[in-house]
Image (cartoon, each protein chain N blue to C red):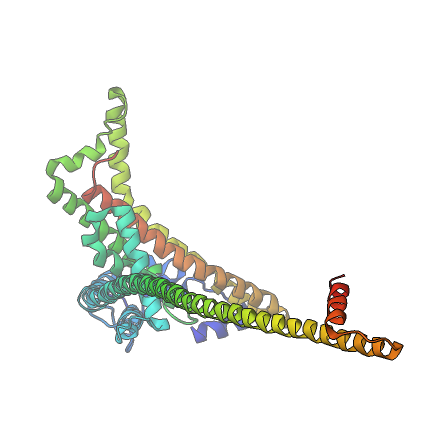
Length: 253
Length: 174
């Protein structure tokens, strides 16, 4: 990253996408499936942040919570209520799962806003895996709990009979497009913000005194990105809850 | 699948995210991370926070119940206090009435006695006054008689005491 900054200062060579490159942590070797990379590093940092946020802060188990414990309880209450409200009471079995997704995405998004960090959630590999996990979980749980009745959600019984096959087609297509939209929404949002910040940073390196303007823009966009980071984690999680309701809730289409 | 540093740099020209050679690596580490987070959450963090929240809820419920009970007891104590106060008032009123009645009796007796004494004294005094008045009237008659006898004698005529007395008595009755 530092070398890139120097290059930008020299000949205005802005590489906004370079920050998304997966690199090995040690040496320059090929990236095997087990190679520790910057992905590994920032996921490990996310895990440490999670432990600090939800485990260390609650170790005193205080009735009157400390600030850290309040934050942990806030996260817990927020996601617990979301799962209960959206996925229904049955969905609470999946609360640890949903909480895992939310905390991972939220922490990755927020940690990615640290300058020179690597943002896991800009990687389509990561978001696609997350979305496919949700997709397969919903599909498998749906068939286990409802059997063939799970397919009834594609057959819109409230629509006129003639329209039902057409609607079924649309429902099935939208069902299979879900993982795509689910994953691309997250990685696209995260990537766009980071790329824009990088472009402005490149300008700032090349503009001398006038670089005050792009720096101010970076500050503003960074503030916006904090919002985007939280909102996208929220959106991914609430969509997961909505999909889970199809699997565990009552048929309501 | 594995690419060297130059291949990486080429991939960086477009979207490094679409460099599929890094996908197995990312997916592997993602799954490891998710499993770790899941176990940290489901084994440690979430049960602990749930326990704390439940604890707090029960503490608050218990405290509210205790407060309610204390309030009831306070109300009871106030009622008992009011009852005691009321009975003490009645008692006091009774005692006051009894004392008043006794005092009235004593007072009546004393004033009756005093009245009797006063009327006895008044009767005695009247008697004395009557005696003194009688004495005075007799003394006046005596003095008149003597004075008349002396006047008659001084005028140079003699007259007996009986006549003078009769005349003076007639005059005094006059």
